[in-house]
Figure (cartoon, rainbow, N blue to C red):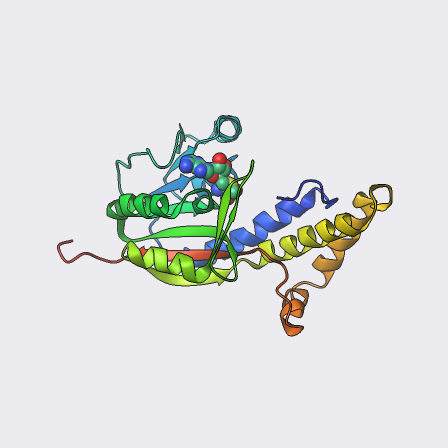
Length: 248
Ligand SMILES: C[S@@+](CC[C@H](N)C(=O)[O-])C[C@H]1O[C@@H](n2cnc3c(N)ncnc32)[C@H](O)[C@@H]1O
């Protein structure tokens, strides 16, 4: 998300640490047995979860990302790396938590529904599904091309979850993401108005990043005060609990 914007190397680490605090709070009190990390990317979260759950099953469909993740988690004996598509993955054991971090946006709506319905019987009593998804303020925005994604609104996700019989226990804005996204969209605008030789991205990125960090958190509420929908993309955590069926 943050390459090419001139932000310092620590920007990704800052966002990850801040998101970790949110996740820790959201999942406080759930069982720490087995967890499933679907679309685990390079495994930053899988590695983190390995210190909190007795077993982590980490699934990734991209071979290069899978390889990085497998290497990163090689010393963690409680991580089971699986190279494959989440849609064809067959769960085999009960999970205290399924984490889908930025994966649903790559799936069309019927695949999202099919995937969640497949997971529900494997979430143990008291267990949760935690999604972290990039969102838009209204409806659904499809981006085609080399990077194909569907950005959905909180309402659209809530309706999809309801279709699957899943209650949203909590929906929380991902403020660390929002702050970084404000920076990314500011630099994109800068690139759009300045001729290339004058862009000085390392300087513009550094100033933008540290300006936002120093003015955090109040800066995130400024666009709304002026009636501006900025940044265009937001991000939310969805803490979901499958409804308990009558026969369970
Ligand atoms: C935005 S990245 C997030 C990675 C990681 N979950 C995180 O939060 O840092 C989404 C990941 O989902 C993976 N992915 C997308 N569709 C997938 C699918 N159908 N099956 C498995 N992985 C998938 C992508 O390859 C990518 O690594």
